[in-house]
Image 1 (tube, rainbow, N blue to C red):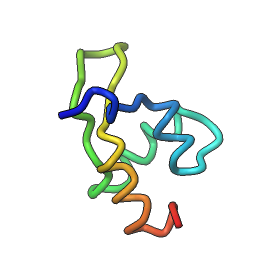
Image 2: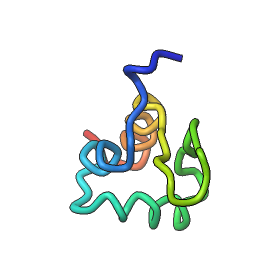
Image 3: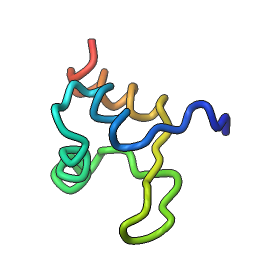
Length: 65
């Protein structure tokens, strides 16, 4: 895994065209196929996702052209 490919909720929101990074949490609960974080250090701590997984999901669902 390339650490340069890790993105936080703010970057996930930007990739998906969401206004708020809090929406990423909503998406993860609403969509069963939404990529899971690859790094979760526990409650209240930063979550990190793989950019490639977010982009692939965004393209599959039409959120990224």
